[in-house]
Each structure stands twice: as structure tokens, then as C-alpha cells.
Image (cartoon, rainbow, N blue to C red; front, side):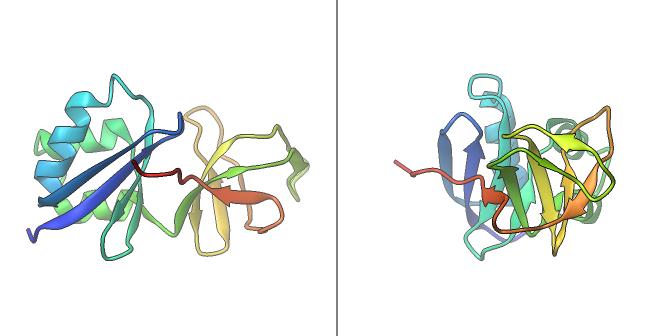
Length: 134
């Protein structure tokens, strides 16, 4: 695995930057401290690739229960976003402001273990989960 620089974002306005590590090394470091700044929701490679950070999937990868390709396939996305206003999906589902979504192209998927909600990405409703890096 090649080395990258990574930035991990929490939805509590915190970020962690890890330099010159491969993905497995970076995930082990962040997974070990994610309890303190939970939840980490997004990781960005220095090449621009974006991934949703899912603790359960990361743990499976660290414990060698899934492969690198399976990890990438499950987590890679266009962006991790929140809806900045309340809205109703085209299927009539009312969403409160501040829900967390995984964006894949123009499709947004609600990050919720209990409900599957999908809607179209609209720039007027959504914004990226990114914060000032210190």
C-alpha cells in the first residue's frame, strides 16, 4: 500500500492530519483515538479521494475480516455532507436540519443504521463536512 497524507474530520469541528502513512497505519492510529473525538465521519487522502469513516467497517479491515478493495468499495464517496436546512425528500420523508449523508455523485444516502433514505444532491440544501485544520 502506498503512503499518503490523510485528514480525518469529526462532526464536532475537530480534525486530525496524519502524514506519510499507508491507509492501514492511518486507520489504526485514528481508530485507536476515535473514542475521544467521536464520531469521526470523513477521511480525505491528499490525492483528493473522500471516504465516509464507518467505525465498524474500519474495525473489520484492521482485523483482516475484509480486504483493502472491500474497504474502499464500502467507504469511498464523493463527499460526506450535512443538510443545512430542514427539507422533505421526493418520497415525502421529512428531514431535520443537520443530518449526516454520504454523497455519491448526485445521490445522497442518509447515514443511519435504522433507516435507508436516499435523495438527490442539491447545493442549496447540503454542505460539506469540513472544518478549519489547525
